[in-house]
Length: 231
Picture 1 (tube, one colour):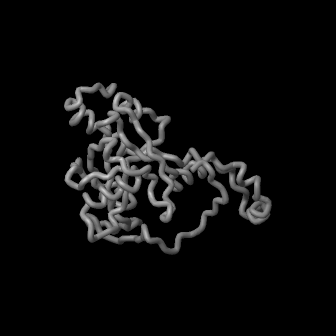
Picture 2 (cartoon, one colour):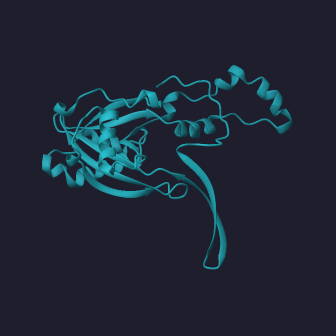
Picture 3 (tube, one colour):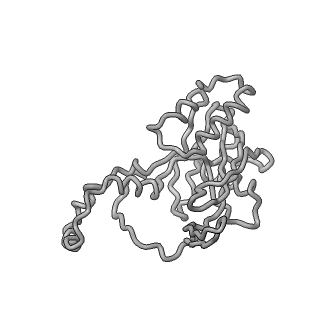
C-alpha cells in the first residue's frame, strides 16, 4: 500500500464506473449548463464488534486523494516553449517531487458500489462486510441508518448507510477486499472509547461517513452499552 510509483496521468476515454456529461437547461428563464458524472450509487456499513467494543473500519489508498495532494506539491510549471525540453529531462527529478503514498491513504467505512441489480442493498452491504472485513453476518442483522446524496456538484449519487453488530464468532477471514479487482484494503479497529477523538482529529484522513456514523452511534447506541465515547 505504501509503494506508489510510475505515475502517469492520461485522458479517460471510457470507464466502467463514471461517464461525463454536460446538461443544458433553463432555470427561471435563464439558460444554464452544468457538467456532471454519471456514477453508481453505493452502500456503506458502520461495523461494531461487540466482543472487543470497537469499530471496524477499512484503510486504503485512494488515487483521487493522492492526486489532489500531488497537484499541491508540483513545482511551478515551465513556460510553454520550455515544456517539451523539461519533459525530456523529467525522469527521476519528476519523481523526487512526489508526495509519500500515505498522502493518498484514507480511513473509511466498509463500502461498495451498487452494481448488482439482482441483489438488494442489504445483500450488497453484506457481501462488502465479508469481502472487505472478513465478517459473515446475516442480512437480517443489517440496520439502515439513512441515505443521502454525495458529490452533489459532480455526481449526485446516492449512498445508503447501514449499521451492523458483529462478534469475533462472525469473523471467518482476514478481509482485505478482492485482489483480482485491484483492491488492497487494511482492516482497522478503533476502540469505542477513542471513537470521537478519532473522528475529530484532522490529522487522521477520513471520510465524512466515518464522522457522521460515529456521531450517530454516540447518539443512538452508546446508551445501550453504557460506555463513554469521550465526547
